[in-house]
Image (cartoon, rainbow, N blue to C red; front, side):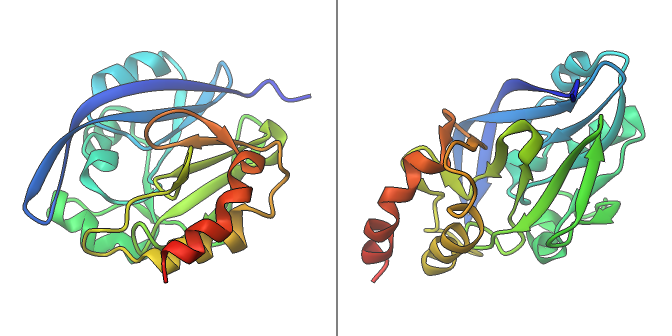
Length: 210
């Protein structure tokens, strides 16, 4: 029986792309036990994330994608903890817009398994919202961390550069909707949902994209 747990922070800041800037609240997810953890999306506030971690060893800072609001606090958190920053290489062009002088420390690849506190997180490459967007599936925790790929009510936004609506729908169809229906979807912004709650809307999304 696993002792791993999921903790949730909400941090606030701005999202900037294509010349616009918007105020946003981001979900930061911490997965671990009393001794070690990983952070999924180090958004906005390295101090708040470090405080939530306490004395635990941070094994990795995992980026679901490289929009600035999901990675802006990653270098500061890495410097503070010594943890590596992991990103899918297809998102390096986006990463460099925010951190031109500091590259990630490692690459995420589709199917890769990351282990923390005895729990496996499987990397699912789900492009569409961003070229290197990934989700992290943790079957032992009945959870998938979807970043901005899937929200309560539908796919993430695809109206800006580096994004593509048919691609995100295909990613959701082929990588997420075949997960168990009761899998909790923990998103990059807003409320959680489940795979089963979102699956009936797939055809509507496909039709909307045509």
